[in-house]
Image (cartoon, rainbow, N blue to C red; front, side, top):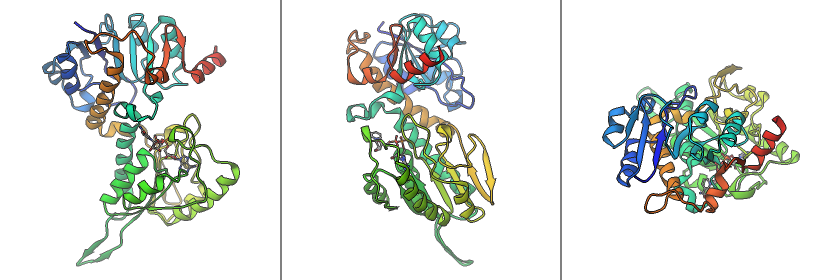
Length: 379
Ligand SMILES: NC(=O)c1ccc[n+]([C@@H]2O[C@H](COP(=O)([O-])OP(=O)(O)OC[C@H]3O[C@@H](n4cnc5c(N)ncnc54)[C@H](O)[C@@H]3O)[C@@H](O)[C@H]2O)c1
């Protein structure tokens, strides 16, 4: 036997994804590993216990006995401190562990000497593309955001020429053209809308145009470290604000996806700007979880102001749970290749750049500096 892996049922409210799918279980089993799956873990993604069992998984009735003897735990969201207490010291947990947050869990992992790899910290280098779970899940989020915008919009998205007259296409504006924004652009274009997009990184312009959308140019290029955006200066924010409010006022659907790593999401759409929109228009704020790009956004709610609907949806990937779980599980499978030797043993040398960058806690020590500081401040 090589290693034993455990896959729990996710307990975060509204979570429908699962960290492993039968296809990945089959590959791991074929390589000699033992995969334990908590009964019902795949239910939210329409993956049955039988499908997991046929792929070679051992089903475990609840998460009490799931962790004992497991060297690697695969998760979507961070475990609770109670989950951590059930794991064997030295076990490894891989998932979206929420670096800088979930401090009671990090404290529990530190005390119990559990190693945690946070997928949010995987560097955006080409070798890590296949394990980039932020990108795979943002792709799902962008797709769902465009569909939500289309379904809430009182107009058709495409142009229609019918016996009842010609319908002009709807205008969709995407603010933030990263992974989610580009998928929202592609989806809105496929639905036939006129699409415009804006990003502070000028490099995004070419990608936006290649999808058949217009790129709104501003004399700012705020490309920061690692291909991410940097925060704008106050002068740049004023320039941005006036261009964005003109474009927002013209749009039927606005999808906002702007984020700056480690910071609150930038405010791009003020209440006054929303008031300029036509009644019936829609704002879908994908940054609701990180503070919102629109001043009116309430996470998990829909706010109506001046007849404009402002949606602040949470966990959009869970709305396409089957494909989101498949993509996530393949990302984890790639990540596991860094942790396992060719003959299926745990690697003893963890100096690989991707492992070092994504390590949140190891050997009773918090390795991620901002999390360490947050813990220091809260004791
Ligand atoms: N492996 C790789 O090489 C790899 C993988 C994924 C992403 N990337 C790159 O990383 C970058 C960002 O990815 P992401 O989607 O995860 O980013 P993200 O979720 O951090 O941010 C989303 C977008 O918001 C934009 N933004 C930030 N502040 C803004 C503002 N004030 N106004 C308008 N837009 C603003 C960012 O530039 C980004 O494009 C992109 O360049 C992407 O191509 C590289």
